[in-house]
Image (tube, rainbow, N blue to C red):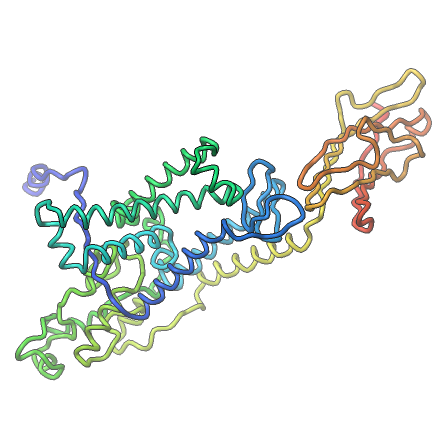
Length: 479
């Protein structure tokens, strides 16, 4: 009862106030890897909308999601709404790849490739350039508002806002033809949707990268919550070697009497000098020495920080490193390694390979045009006054190439002159990326109608007759 009364007296806040994180810069292989990925990602994202690409029809832009003509241009590849199955496969492959990498190396996506991480890194770099290193930024935030604080804080915010704006503009540019859109946008002649989109994305990018930062990863991102389902004891994650770092007497700063390894080991202290550098470089404020935490995004900066300190002391690297729980629990941990031979990882790999195979097969077997034929069944058939029986069909043709194409529609298994077209004529021309619905009638005399149960439609592209398509259809003449 006493415990219950004590719990009743404790007020738990509904919202925990954010404690600002002032990260320290660090040098090392993981920092270099993150910087390289950031530069590659930014170059790709910001330059692709401006990359010209010659094609027979449509915009001469390498990557364009043209919603007006309902075509997505990806270099020489053109995706149509009919290819929605391919998009589903790509999304499935992306999910399987995420699960596969998480099972092997934890939240590597979050640490290196996630948009939130990339833009937050850029905003932190802006702060570092304008406001200085971590101690200077902490001191700046604590001091009262003056000219220096206004210029440094305001200057950083303005640059972040400009980067957010250009991020938003570049995203909208993927849906418009550049540089025409660039001119129309800045003279106020663009579609209102473009302005709304840029404003919304500018604000959301600024909030996520400049103000919220780690809160997006910790509270808003669902991946942080279900990642544990994919983790196993053999998954490689940034980890602290507890036995080596703590010893039997715990960690202690390197000072007189416990400065060398021999002195520390003699008194039972571990190799961790409790400098806090690993915590100071962490973008989410995680203390890796407390074990695996869901806030950790596996960026590896704590490893660079710890290795820097070990190098300065002349001690062995690897106190903090990518390692698995199983390996670190051994009396003498071995060299960290990727363990592929696990049921869960093999399952993800199998699904990934299977879907990649299906995707490649679908691309290899794509046709230059698509045909769908539907029999009009209201009524099922029509008895004409001259005794002939009429069936009606609707042929839907989609031209999936970037040149206009002529299509000849024939039948197999029917007498000549039994196929009748409307005003569209035969052959008919369909413009690139367009579709057409062609109503056709099949008229058979009473005797032929009774003996005909089915026939074939043959659609022939005149520029490439060997790619003709045959569709089997039924003919109805009796109830």
